[in-house]
Amino acid sequence: MRKPIGWSTIIIAILVAVSAVLVWRRDGADGVLDILTHDLSLFGGILPRVLAGCLLGAFISEILPHEKVSRSLGPKSGLMGLLIGTAFGAILPGGPFTAYPVASALLAVGADFGATIAMVVSWTLIGYGRAVAWEIPIMGTDFTLWRIVISLPLPVLAGALGRFVYVRLYPKPLAKDDEN
Image 1 (cartoon, one colour):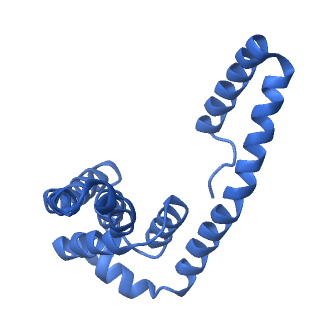
Image 2 (image 1 turned 120 degrees about the vertical axis):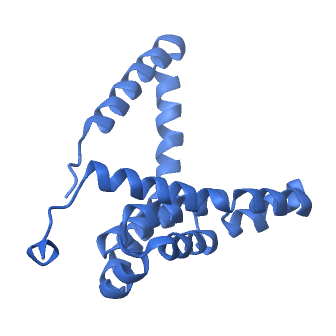
Image 3 (image 1 turned 60 degrees about the horizontal axis):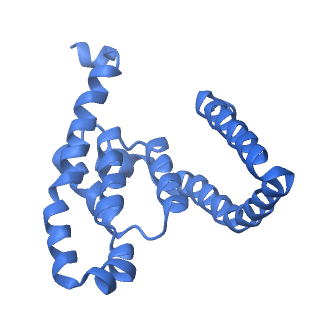
């Protein structure tokens, strides 16, 4: 279980406090209250998505077959696991409130860091949802297709590097069966 208040939360809280003091000095209490009012409204809009994403991740980790995930995306899945992670990330709909809880759920049920990194990088670089909704209408089909083609190997490379680094930073002790 993660600590609710870690170093990143403390740093963000300090930055918020310093920013609030600077706004208060420049614009007074009304400036700070305007920002708080706007951000509470923003928070109210985001909260349902955060809750839905967290619940999605929790439910996925319960319903996914652990053995199949471990076999398809686990440490022994090889290049195929990286390719599956890449393909899954490319087709995964939604924003960060979906992608990161799903990635966390995959890790919880047996996917390794490499395949999960490939999934997240693919979702970030290749994700079809953003390409169809935003990129093709704004940038055009040629640009979008070339960007996707050029980006295709990157999730696999990132996943392979992630897998390589992870097993060296966090080596697992040999099981008794592995010693024979």
